[in-house]
Length: 234
Image (cartoon, rainbow, N blue to C red; front, side, top):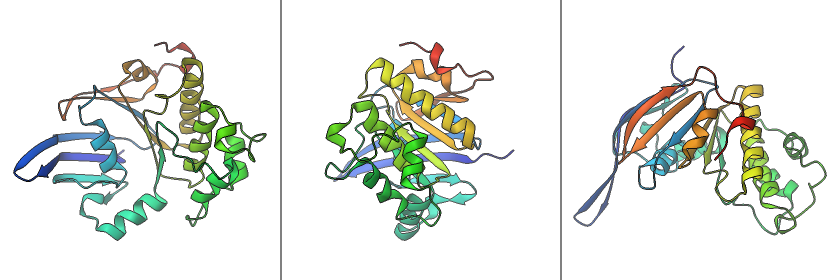
C-alpha cells in the first residue's frame, strides 16, 4: 500500500532580513492511511512547522509534501484554502472555541463550510457530550472543551486529523480520556491521525512514531502492537 502522507526532502527556511532560520532540513517520511502517527521531539525540533505544512497553514521552501496523491507543496493560496476547508481537521492545545457560541454552534461552524459533513448533534454525541450541547465553553471543563474541539474537527469528515499537543492543557486522567477518544475514532473510522507532542510516553499508542531533533527526522519506528491508552503512564 502506498503512503497516504509522503514528505520528500522537505526544507523550511524562515528569512528575516539577511538572517535565515532553518526550521526543517531535508525531512523525509511516510504515513499509511488509517494510521495513528505520533511526531515527538523537544521544543524547537520542528514539530509545529511540520504540522503547519501538513495542514496547509504554511508552505515549504523546497521538497515535496504529498497527501492522498495530491502534491500540496505545489498548491496556490486558493487550493490550500480548499484543502484546509475540506480535507483536514484540526485539534489544538487550547481548544480555540468561540466563547459566545454554544458547543453545538461551535461544531456547526465547521459543518457549515463542508459539502459532506456530520450533523453537529451527532458529532457531539460521538464524543459523549449529548447532554452538554447547549452549554457555552465557559460552562465546560477543559476536557469537555477539548471534546467539543474534536467534535468540530470530526464534523468535517476530514481525511486527516491533526492534533497539536491535544492533552497539553489537561490533567492526567482527562488527557488519557482524550487520547482514547482519538485512538477509538481512528480505529472505528479509518481516519489518519497525526499527533504532535513533546511527551514521549504517547509513542506507545501510535502505529508509527516519527522522532524529530533539530529540524530533522532522527528516526521512524513502527509499532506492530500499539499500547492501549489505559496502559500508558506519564
